Image 1 (tube, rainbow, N blue to C red):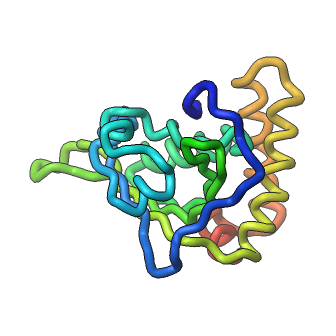
Image 2 (cartoon, rainbow, N blue to C red):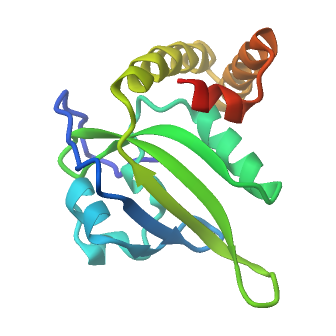
Length: 174
C-alpha cells in the first residue's frame, strides 16, 4: 500500500522524456536502489526509499489486479510492461510506462527485480486511466478485497480475449 497519511492531490508531476526512472528491489519488493530521477520525481530521500517496500509510491487509484498481473508475470520468469500511476510523497501523482524484469545472480538464482520507467504517451494514459477506473470500481464493489481483485482481474482477461490479443499486445497497442 501507499505510505499512510498521504492524501492524494490532483496535481500531476512530470519527468523529462529523455529521463528514465530506475529502481531495483529484493525478492520481497524492498527497494535496494533508486536513481536520482526516481528520488526527485517521488520526492523521497534516498534514505527513505532504500529498504522501503516499492509500494510506498502506489497511488490509491491503481487497481490491485494490475499488480497481481505484474507479480504473476514475474513469477513465471517473464518481463512485463505496464502503465502505472504512482504517488509522490506530497500526494501528487505521476504516470510511468514501466518495464520490470527479474534479476538473477551468477548461478541463476532470483535475487530481485529491476524496473525502468519512461514517460508514457498521453493518449495511452487517457485510455489506461479510463480502464483502471472501471477496474477499480469493480474491485470496490466487493467488500472482500481479494474477491474484488479477482473480479477485476477477470475483467482484464475478458477484455484481452474479446480483442484477441495478449496482454503485451494490448499494452503496446495503446
